[in-house]
Image (cartoon, rainbow, N blue to C red; front, top):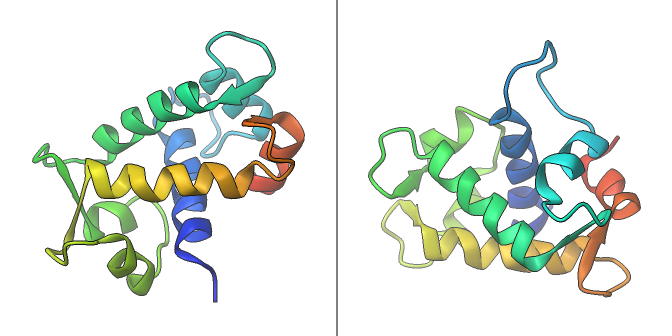
Length: 131
């Protein structure tokens, strides 16, 4: 069974691809995700860049704009396991607050940073998005 971190991370990268302007493709490859997220163009995604992009993703996915993500809002964008959602929902209210979302996402950053250098490089990103 996939960990909550890996399930949510796959979901968030899919969301990242979906919030970009349509250019004929439903999903972006690792190079395109890097270009969107790497604001300083150093070829790496640091924690600040990751945090900024994931905050954008949260508010994009929050279609009813109530400041929380429901399971339905997430599965409308990408497949996610109900048990993974429940584990991320730390207060058990059936929604993910920005805090709950970011808690999981920052743990995901650590999981994606395989060489533990504090950034996600293109090679790590390619493994992550499966491209």
